[in-house]
Image (cartoon, rainbow, N blue to C red; front, side, top):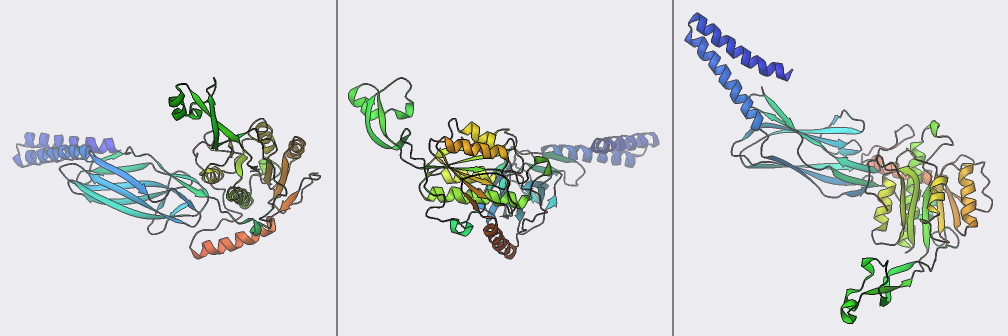
Length: 435
């Protein structure tokens, strides 16, 4: 349609000039030339309208919790020596990041809304638009891509482009609670914790040096000692005695995958897993996460190895934020695979689950025979037929229902939509790969 409109200007001006020549009418000839000249000028103006126009976006915070707000600043600049009479900016936003002041339209992709701004730019002009966003649901989101549209002063000819601006990631962490709120003892919620395995080394505690041996990683080399003795020296670390706790989340909420997923129970499981991980981190324990969900587009399960790095809690929460209702395998299979290396010997495994399939029961019994301490946290109210035997089970569904009701009231006072049983599960985007 746009091509037909462009051709109509050329055809119309040609017809007018032709009629003027046949009728020997200078007025018609001049009118045809004016139409031809204006259409040519309009095309040229539209073609260069977006040249040297730059677009950027800045965000005040990349990580936040549900209910918190963040300021997104859109920056538009015209670096040309002549103005841009009109320009339209269409920014693609996740629907779960609601614009607090302003209107958006529904995008063509599920879970996407469009923020539109129209303005004009003078020569060497710059504009900034602050937009306040409020997180309404846990997830890993990206802002963008953006489309810019402009044209000639009359709006007859247009040009559209996608600026070379990378998408802006935002992580909305799952809600966490203190263990007593979940009905668990904050001092000894999982009994006698295990995981003080001395075969691992603590790189934060250097006890000496020795001669370099083939296979030593470069980060182990002590260059100061090497310079003193004129041969490669490797650091010796004290064996680690840190207790290790692995949070294993079963993403499934029904006994059979074809039954779908309960979004409320799924969010409950993610919050409980995040709460246990936060408690372990604050208790100075080495913590890891295993889940049978996957980062969309990556095709591999979520697995974060045990560690005590200062940013460990952030990485754990980011991994849990990316969980969706999609499962890539069973949790039993993931635990079986992790037992070959990702589970430190004698570690404590806290399984957060709404359902307990027989396959998972068998795996938990095997891990217990291998020396791991197993504790199950049940997040649903449905009874289980599984025979867990002496494996301890903590039921937190009733406590979580009360906490969820209080949290929903708080969000309602802030004007944040509340997740209900009829709401779809949160959509997650690929997060940074966790190793």
